Image (cartoon, rainbow, N blue to C red):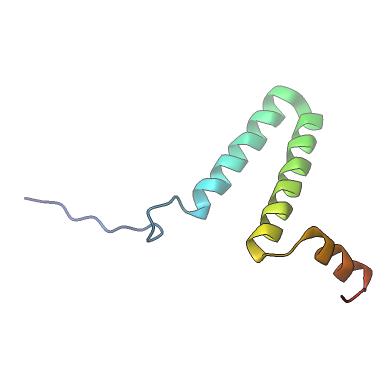
Length: 75
């Protein structure tokens, strides 16, 4: 008797976004537990900066293009 399982992850076999979210949550939990609230805030802020940089890279936007858009200047 063989048991059939469905593949409930991305088609490429890479881990889903939930795995990355869980890893980030565990990192924040460890920072808060061992380092206190200040370390928690540092980890959160650096994680936000990293997410933002990755978001710009995924979209193909350079930092200069983003800053020009924020400042209201159109190239």
